[in-house]
Amino acid sequence: MTARVNYSTRFLRRAWLAALPLWVCACVVPMAPQFEDPPGNLPPYLVSSVPVAGAELRASTDPTDTIEATLGDPNLDDILWVRWLIDYPPYDALLSHVAQQVILPTTGAVERETIHFAASCSNIHGASGLPSHRVTLSVADRPFLPAQEAPPDLLLDSVPVQGFVVRATWFADCP
Image (cartoon, rainbow, N blue to C red; front, side, top):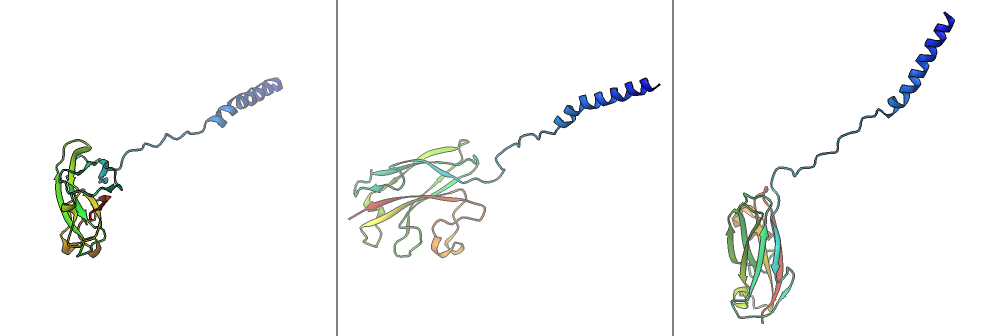
């Protein structure tokens, strides 16, 4: 009987030792996280422009001199509200004004049609008589707020809280 107990004990010890590496290695490996874009609103953006944003525009009286801008929005159902603004931001009642407004309807594509702004000095000059002006492209994915609902320094391109506004600026020297 002792031989039988010894054999059983040795068998159990060997079985336990054989199972030990499996038990030690039997850790749970977590699944990799699944990354998905969060549902909701994403901002529009400037895909490209000619000339590039930040460029100095040459003085011109030719109305065919234009800035071309291609816009995009990952939210395919968003209408894009576009304003070409002069000497803005911040808003200055003597200098700032809306030079042109465009509404780009949804197209079912991220990239929208190219828009143009005649960057001639006749379209840029205000009553200021300043030789240099900022030309700002302001793009929103919601309608712009009426002036009475907008902050005083951003009267021309504020949107509701759930919307986004992006801007690009060029510099024009108009003698």
